[in-house]
Amino acid sequence: MNRNDVRGSARSDRADGAHHRREDPAANDTAPEAKKQKSFWRELPILVVVALALSFLLQTFVARVYLIPSESMEPTLHGCPGCTGDRIVVEKVGYRFTDPRPGDVIVFEGPDSWSAGYVSTRSDNVVVRGLQEIGSLVGVVPPDENDLVKRVIATGGQTVECCDDQGRVLVDGVPLDEPYVTMDFPFTPGVVTCETEVPSGRCFGPVTVPEGHVWVMGDNRSNSADSRYHVGDEHQGSIPLDNVIGKARFIVLPPGRWGLIDSPEILPS
Image 1 (cartoon, helix red, strand yellow):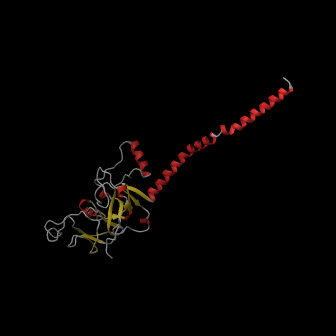
Image 2 (cartoon, one colour):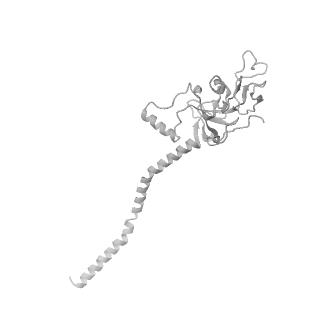
Image 3 (cartoon, helix red, strand yellow):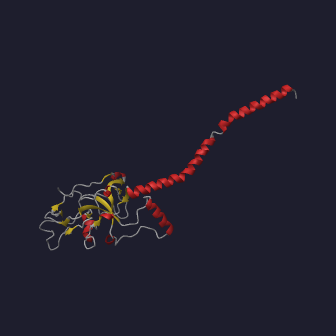
């Protein structure tokens, strides 16, 4: 091999090396993408934990979605055993600074005397029960407690009773304006009242609500086991404020039922 051949070979090798070096960036285009994918899979568990923690904090301290299981708040809230009832957002912040007022729709944990017919929704299977508890923490499974939804009618220190001569509920002797009540027991002046031999099913009281409590009733007065049916308990049928979870603000499901939940002024000033 002569000197020119050697030089030619060297030049060829350098050219081939340069060619390969020029191709390397293209060959390595997938490297950053692979690193991104590895980084994503490493970060995914952290993102999931953060999301669950945020959900837990929001559900515990800010707001939570509840399912309406019965007809006791018809027509304001739809629900029935075995059907898909309304899902409502219950806001928990407001009552940290103020107390419920007459007209508010609230969710509360029923006192012991209200829980006689309550059946736990938790599974007997330990694994399933554990998953249910975890789901409850992040809000995808209902809590294992007797949570109820009713409307506040009277607050601590007020006296509530029914009825006046028109069949209306009275608070401190003043008849309430309750446009949301469309289903109630019969009451006909001179025929079926609180004074007739067979009194109207509307009649109760008077009951003075203990301080730090609220008196609650369902909008479906003829199908609601509310404060009227627990007058003999330690709270005289009322609910301790400590049991109040929050105020029902709006309906989120089904889509055709979207809207705010009305909390009108029911006690004339």
